[in-house]
Amino acid sequence: MALLFFKTKNFIPDFYYSNFSEIDFKFFLDMGKSIIFLDIDNTIMTYSEKVPIKSILDNINKAIELGFDIILVSNNSKQRVSEFANKMNFKYIARANKPFKKGYKKAIKLINYQSKEKVIFIGDQLITDIFGANKMEITNLLVNPLKTKTEHWYTKINRCLENSVLKSMRKIDESMYKKIKKGRSNEK
Ligand SMILES: [Mg+2]
Image 1: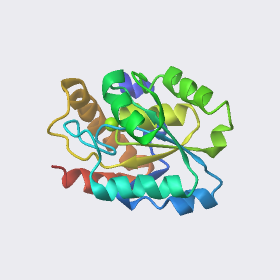
Image 2: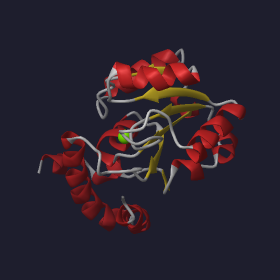
Image 3: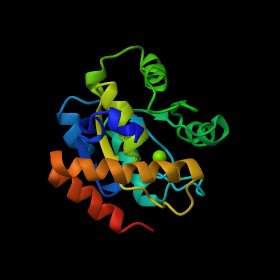
């Protein structure tokens, strides 16, 4: 499989949370982070939602209160991404083409080329979000996808690839493997 060309460690997230609402942004603030590159679909809302549920929105607002600058970085269309971005007054990159570097670089341009050290990337997919962030050397957080049933066909393919990545991850980082696997088993 093509993915075997890539080192498994590139797909291992730095942090894992079962849900976005559980992320402790104070912890990342204390680490020196102040910017969030944020995926949308299945990270903060399902494909069928236009706004996040309250517990997730509350945590987004907590991050804003702590002073985090949030940039949406999504592979979805401008129409989809701009709707939420405009509501929240966030800058955004739509059709980011994660895991390719270009979208991440555009996001870095949006923060006026501040240091990547200040950034955390949050997403739900190993193959796009985490792989891309690792290639860019951006600290990354994986969350469990909110709802996989409504995913598009190409995301479903990514999920199959994820399973093979997870298998090889087990040999390198068993504790991360177990955490992700446990989260995936609770999927809706
Ligand atoms: Mg996503």
